[in-house]
Amino acid sequence: MPRAAAETQALIGKTLGGRFVVERLLGEGGMGAVYAAQEVNTQERVALKVVHAELAARHKEHVSRFVQETLAAALVNHPNVVRSLGAFDDEGRPVLVLELLEGISLDRVIRKGPLPIARAVEIALQASEGIGAAHAKGIVHRDLKPANVFLTEVGERLRVVVLDFGVALLHDPLRDPQDIRQTAHGVLLGTLDYMSPEQLQDARTADARSDVYALGVILFEMLTGRVPFSAETDPMLVVQILTAPHLDVSNHRPDVPAELVGVVDRALAKDPARRFQSMAEFAAALRAFQRDASPEAASPLAPLGSPGRSNLLQWIVIVVLAVVAITAALMR
Image 1 (cartoon, rainbow, N blue to C red):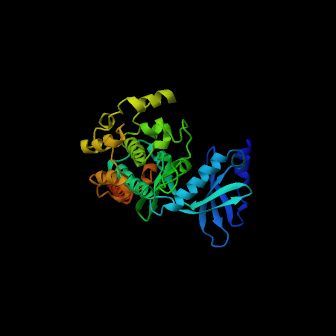
Image 2: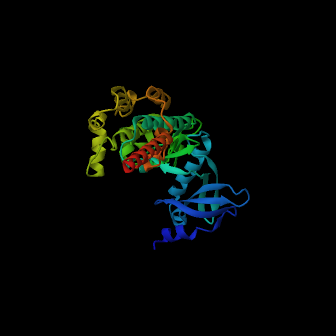
Image 3: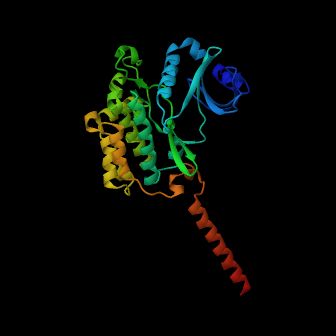
């Protein structure tokens, strides 16, 4: 078993920082792992994001990004951004304490195919409001993608939560840009499918409009089930994003209104000056397509086969009618 994997399993059942009992593994990546845990005094259940000890010791840039995420998440207090509850060091492992979310990530929903238009708009709208709140604090996310958008429920209402500010860019007018921009020249941070042309060319130039582009890609993917550019290799994909027109939403989803297609097209403009200039402007365009959706249309669990209330009632009526019909046939 690789050392990082062994370390991941070894933490389950242990108490970190003298306060948090690790219950189970929620997810793992190359940089670290996320666990469900319980605070020993308050019994509050939280999520712990733990950097692998070996990476923390040997790769200071990982720790730097982790600190960046801690700072970024702590600055933003908005229901559509994951809440940061603090951070601590445990035997050389940096640990970030986050609210524990129950639900499903957007990438898992999209794998099942395109979303209903009303639901796609609602998810994009809530995500835009959360990212807009981050932008108001001078934070550019730079790694928006479906895996970093989480869907949960508050009662019967959908709550969209933006995660993972690990490669966020903090713009602080009181500090030297060379100090706050941690991305080295020529280094790509982010996920290619969702990176804007200017971010691909120099990530240090990314601003709020780069996040607008990424959310435009996510909206395109929710509506069509695919990303707007595809290529066999990463270099070919970069060339496509920089030079080629994106796929047409209408060719893959004819029922999408032309006006909404126009919103997606504007968000995906190669020239940042031709995009929505802020998330607030993007959100205003999306609100024109909001619908009074039924609870199941807004529920993040519906794509997994969880019936909404009206669907359940329809099935009950169908079953009752079927039973009545069978009974009548048998009595003839």
